[in-house]
Image 1: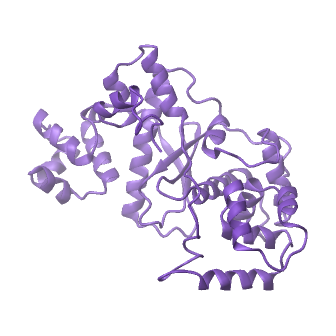
Image 2: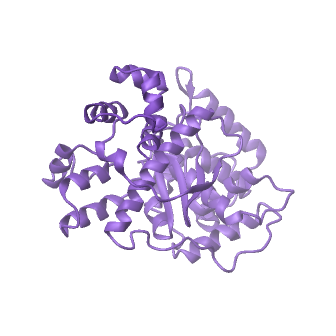
Image 3: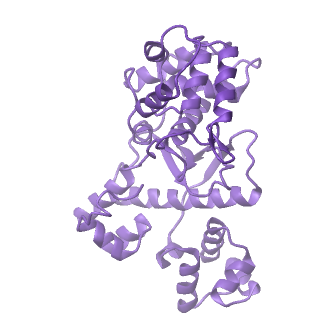
Length: 360
C-alpha cells in the first residue's frame, strides 16, 4: 500500500524515478523498491519524500477505497500519456480527500447526479440542443439568468468538480469520469473563469447528450452548442443582441462576457448559432480578432480586458471547517484535508486578510 502511495504521489508531481531519487539523495533503484513494496523507507526518508512530492506525511498512509473508472478525456486531446498520468494522479488524490471527509461529515456528497426525465431520446439537429439545455436549466431551477457559481451548482446536483493545475501546458480540455457511483468532471485550476465555465458546461453536455446524438452530428460540436445554450439561453441571448446584426462591438461582447461568463469569442459563436449574424459576418469578426492583440498574441488567443474570475469551489473547504468547529477533527487533520501547511490553516482561522476567503 505504501508503495502505491509513493508511486501515485510521484505521478501527480510529474517526476520520473530518477528525478525523485535525485531530489532526496537516493538511487532510482531505491525508489523503485519502495514503490514495489520490496523495501520500506525510514521515517527520515518519508519526510524527504513528502517534501519532494509536496504532500504531508499523512498522505502516505491514507486508505484509498474507490475506483476511478469510465475516464473520458476530450476527443482529440493533445495531452501526452505522461501529462494524462499527472492529471489523473492529482484527481485521485483530491477525490481521496473528499471520500475521507465524507466518512467524517456524513452526506458530504448531496445526491447522485440524475438526468431530467423529459429529455428527448434522440437529438437529430443542432437546433434541438437549445431545448435540451433549457430542459436541464429548468430541472435545476436555474431560471434564465446568468449562473453565478457553476461549480457550486453542479456539486449541488451531484457532480463532483475537480480543478487540477496539471493541464499539460494548456493542452488539457477537461474530462469526465466515475468515482465509485459518483460523476466527476475535471477542468484546469489555472484557466480563466470563462474557459472553466465553458468546459464544465461542455462536459455536462457529454453527460446529458450521451447516446442521444444522431450519428450525423459531430459530438464535440453538439456539446459546444449545449454549453453555449446552457450558459446563455436563447431567449436571453436574442434579448441582449437583437434578432439580426451585421456587427458586434468588442466592448459590447466584453460586457456580455462579464455578465454571463461566456467568452467574447463564445458570444460570436452564439450569435452565429442563433442566426443573429450570418457566416460572412462571423468571419469578419474572426478576422478582426486575429488582427488585434499585443505582440504575437491575438484576441482569439487572449481576449482584451480583465479576465473573467475563476470558479471558486467552496463546499469542500466549508465542510472541513464545519468538522473542525464540531471537533470531529483536529487542526492537523484539517490541514491535511485542505492540503495546506498547519501554519496557513491557523492563519485562515484567524481570518487574516490574505487567507480569509480560502483557496481559489
